[in-house]
Image (cartoon, rainbow, N blue to C red; front, side, top):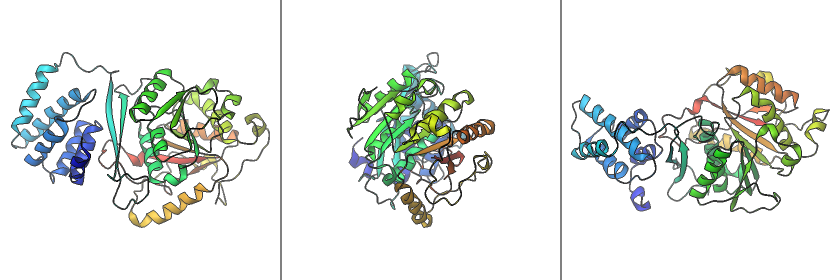
Length: 402
């Protein structure tokens, strides 16, 4: 879609288009459509949907998605005794002919959706495009479990992406390594803020192949299983096949990142010992993981007079807070403190779905001499996905591991 055409849209129209391109659930999309029409699905809103969503959106999976949405849109308007645009009836009839119910989209079929980060007017950082939006096309699976969960967009990867774009100075010029990179969204955002090196990893080969495709969709060069990790090229994102259970200390010490990231990686109790081992090796610059466990004392987090004991971080302690303009200065000051770190740090964003699993992670981290600090309420990203009603930011917690 032409940039000039996008610039002429109102904010509510841009949110509606963004929700459609992101393939939000039909209920969420209808909610955004009502907001665009001041609470109603007006003729103007219907015309916008026809002109800018249905007739111009192209990509794998949009026909099936559009059919479901148009059906629900027509039903909603008729149930409220409204007038449905003739073009919507004609479009639905076309869908019925070309896309029959007896040939539904398969559960494991891939679709191409676009995640649009919309920057608020108060956002003055150089990372913000002139258009005030960053659109990231991603090929994803409709099956949340395909690729060992790595081919879908998960909430914590959205959160980390917002964090990176909100505080680019933390990541710009730094060597970054992501564990469990999934569709590659976090890596794309790291490249956008000009991290000096971006290394993405995953233990599933199908996920790795899909991730590489997404990087190429976003005009990033990729290298897989690079034999010489010391070679740096800011235009290249490196993709590494890294099953946690078989990752060796020698292999991991080759990378020596300054920042490690992980989104929704605390979910399988059987994988947690391997995850903690990987984090401990990547975070420890000076000594081997084995030597560290035999008695080294890890460095404290800057500004910490007292580090939270692992068991003080329980699954019920988080209360959602939303950012407002008056808080921005203080939060940015916290972010500036993080930039001055000399030692590696890991940022882990996670939805705590099972308290016992999370407590197990904390116990293993404590045994490995890792220190965990919660930053959920002190380092909150801007809401760059205001149209994404299905994204529950309040359920996500942010931790640093050192």
